[in-house]
Image (tube, rainbow, N blue to C red; front, side):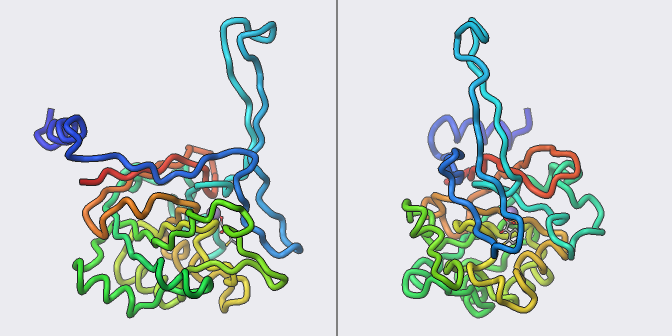
Length: 258
Ligand code: 23J
Ligand code: MN
């Protein structure tokens, strides 16, 4: 075995490296992105029992399930957005598995988001992170820590008023910087989608989706446990289901961290 792989297993075994689950539970109660009512919305997760060691299957338990591609903790592929529709290898089944693993850069805006639920990450805030931790490397996952996943009541998590949801996100200048000048794998967030709650009112609408996916970058939504990661030094593994032509998929996301 290669020396690094042997050392990886050794350090996982000894506890010098830890695996942190960044995935929220997937159930019919999982909160959903509320799009304006003129649009189709993603369906809730559904699950039904096929047998439970009974007459329907005496020695086995299993379920069927049905879900939206963008329900719960999920991956966004470039084909999800009109700006990425003609890019090569833009659906989940065609993405190289090499891109399912990359270093994590965790930008903590939890203080700003607690003060202002509509807070948007600025390029200045990104540059401040880089002054402290070094330049965001090519192929990194930029994870936006907002502590939003600690809002356990779906009402507080979605945080909607009569004019729509109020949740933090990125300015379009930040999305452009990360996609075009840093060549990241993508952006991961704790909120229900990778755009801010009010982003349907922005120009262009949902600018993070528009800019990221237009540059062939990915998204991860509804992450948790970002508070257990260092600002730099962890590695994220995020491998979506191989749905043929799929625009995204629910998935298990984890980080390996010192
Ligand atoms: C469709 C339209 C707007 C948004 C989204 C999907 C998502 O957040 C998503 O899950 O990709 S904001
Ligand atoms: Mn999505």
